Length: 246
Ligand SMILES: O=P(O)(O)OC[C@H]1O[C@H](O[C@H]2O[C@H](CO)[C@@H](O)[C@H](O)[C@H]2O)[C@H](O)[C@@H](O)[C@@H]1O
Image (tube, rainbow, N blue to C red):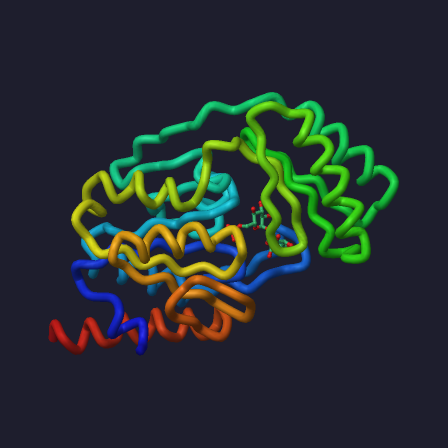
């Protein structure tokens, strides 16, 4: 089944960012956004009458910078912040990060390859440059989170993050589906990471479809090989739409 076949005009499209619509990069800031991706997103946004949202671990501001001049509905920091289709920003309560910040910086000061990323209500410890430190990073962040009321730990690709416990991508998708233009539509969520699994189960429980990008175990019912394959499918879905409407 192709994305063009899955995406009816009555669908709502939810897209993860890193590893899904763009290829993973050695550092968070080094991601490349191909121009045709912006074009596809704009066309799909029009086709679905605005029912397109990015559901990311990144802050909303970073997504805006990467996708400029597009300004889509976005859930950022794994749902801890959300901008609706009409531009209203909803921020979840945050909790003190002192323990996780101290633990992440303590380790990073001993290992220059580690990278500490600060986000609103969240701290991410990246070990992509030093993958042999995975267990040490996990252990340090687990201990710090256990000492930090309100925070939970999330494991992503070469990263371990502390984030507000109430936030999740699944909850963000459900919140979007309560509002126009998403309400009443069949949700499709496309993601690549274990942090996206809750999004897949959410949309499938609600009668929609989860699409996993890349390898690995998943609850999603459909799979695409990699971000390049997804971008090709998005371009094909746009072309099919133009053929239907011309
Ligand atoms: O939910 P996503 O949109 O997939 O965001 C997840 C995290 O993405 C970023 O980190 C990841 O991508 C980097 C660039 O490709 C890569 O260097 C890193 O190893 C990945 O973990 C971002 O920096 C995080 O804040 C997001 O939570």
